[in-house]
Length: 307
Image (cartoon, rainbow, N blue to C red; front, side, top):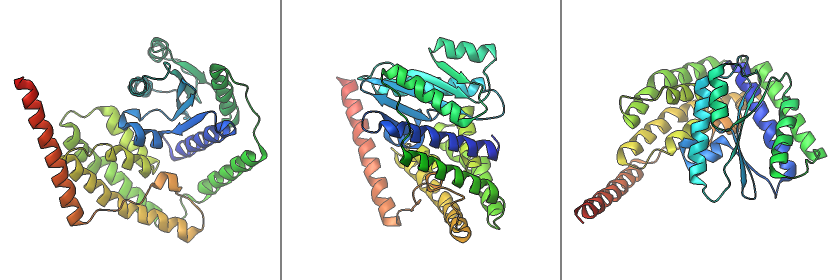
């Protein structure tokens, strides 16, 4: 994904979230980062979760210059199935794959059809794509589409201005090449090593691709959410600490770029919360807690097996 495409993709996500804000109080809409923090990294690939009553919609949006890849489509379907399994009290989800380009590959069309997913594709304008998605979801929920309020129109205008400012200044700051090198190093060298410790030698290619995509978008919030969800053992906790130690300096540089330019080139949503590294004493206490908890679980498992 090119830098321009990733920025347009974020603008589309903002448009969709803001469009549904007109139904605030009745329709719930949750973006990927928040969704993963609530339900775990199995939800990566669902850009928006939308709920009304017991009805739910899972959406993935691709605003790229080429047709969606089969790998991305399968990833979305797997993530949607995993989330649906965690929400048995809700109706089966309506899956919508929104794509800037038409989906023409037979295997991609078959995967979407077999999973019961719907497609919205072949757009030249973000506004049109957003409105079509909004109307389609409203039809599924059985509610009347509402017009945008003046306040929301102003919010959309501001988001567009911020996007244009990002586009104009993205290569003008002296620290940006340094940040790019650091992110590339994490994506190409550090992340595969940490993922290898989490998943063993056989790491799914889509997981590595996902990490590299997040780095190319400077979406450190999603990176933190991904690794934060995997810290249930002492070993996984050590990996989490290494992630914090690696990403914190990059976040500091990104905030410095924002401060020196006076423009939010790197949005807070993409930078994420401060990657504060616990003190040595706090780390020691947490490791002991995780060790004892997993030891108790192992003992209980042995007792149950003996029975």
